[in-house]
Length: 406
Ligand code: UDP
Picture 1: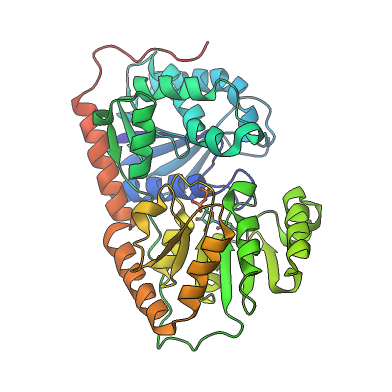
Picture 2: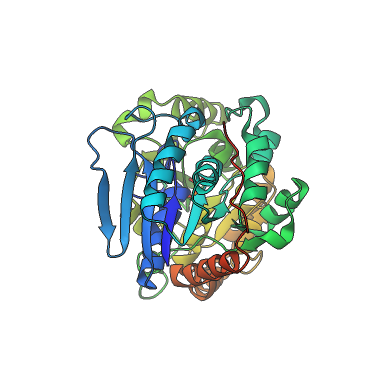
């Protein structure tokens, strides 16, 4: 199949860990590569956010990245990108009329808006992965949600106009259903893990680290729960917390979220026991994860939560919030423990339970690694995505989808 993947803000070539660069970038890069490995021809369309970018980059065999000129050729926060989606759609429509793909797979709601609009001019099927839903974001972030006002309504239109939705977890299906989307339209296909990169430690289990190390990896935005992890640490006197993500180490002092988190550390009296590393290259993460005793994935809400899987793949047990994708990926009591989200007491109790039992931790690490290998390799994820594409093609709409913008 000729697959057009659309990922407006999240380039598969971007550096990870910044405010807007995380799981979606990893997902699009890895899924495109895995589909190409299965013989498909993939072009990823992403917005050109620098004037230095070549129009097209060959990312690997069977995967090209097309830099779409839409809006200024500089970085723009994703919540400010909607005004450029009309232009983005026009470029897609031009490309697809000249060389029609078999399927379009849009990632994030604005890619869906652009893809549905472009597809309306050339009649190809669009599959949609939301990665995050505006309704959920609004529920948790309230007035702090900087998404465009039209997001929730446009998301509903995209969900109904797309041939199929690929949800990344079961919880998302319930959210889509509450939005009025027919669940028969939805396939659940999880995100995956690079099993050649994220591997368990070789050799015998290392002795208990002193002090025990807790690790949290992710973008430094409040909803990722770093504040709650710091408050949980204050309840565990003998552990250290390493926080990976955010800007590079030399820019941490200027980062407003870092300034806020340092205030929380000082208030809790744990500044000496928390280390912020800043962004680390993806390739360095497995060693960092293996050096820790427990990985914390404790966001307020989470469409998927790749870091929990990455830890399991490395044989490290997880304390995760009982939300979103982690309800599917983490098996409580087997590969880690679930805690109430935004609840430092509950997070601390789960951490203490794991730190108190070295053998249980090791057993959970083994079970996590086995679970990830069985269900979450990109090969399996690509195969299930391909099945969803085939389903969409079988039920191709007679008419082109309706435009949802302008
Ligand atoms: N990541 C990274 N370096 C960093 C911070 C994060 O490589 O400094 C990666 C991390 O390994 C994971 C992704 O960024 O693959 C974050 O994905 P997740 O699903 O946890 O969060 P999202 O960013 O999608 O909300």
